[in-house]
Image 1 (cartoon, one colour):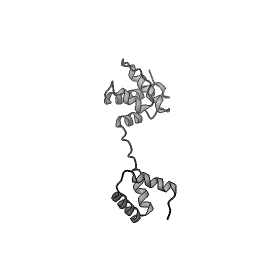
Image 2 (cartoon, rainbow, N blue to C red):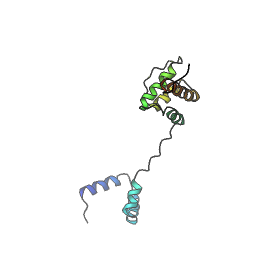
Image 3 (cartoon, rainbow, N blue to C red):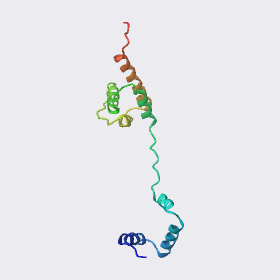
Image 4 (cartoon, rainbow, N blue to C red):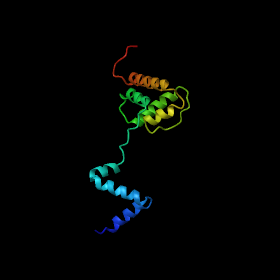
Length: 133
């Protein structure tokens, strides 16, 4: 049996850092297992999902009634919190980014409360209900 040049190159690369005994045991393992098992062993393990920040989730839920992209909601939240006198001069790329940056100046409870107050203000300002003065 002759090997193609690409197979010879692959074997040479495999043999570069291994002893003869290691190669023999590897070849024996390859002969003992079928292709499906060998390819499964080579496959990268599935990535675990990144844990979502519970504060970001809470703020997303609070701002869900605002119809618009996440970046717009983030801008609204940052502008609302800047009205309180804090010097917030950054452009968030999204809600998660805004929450991350707001955490530098505010506690989680303050951010949650601000999101709820913002929604109350938006509901009051843009509500279709007539109010009696």
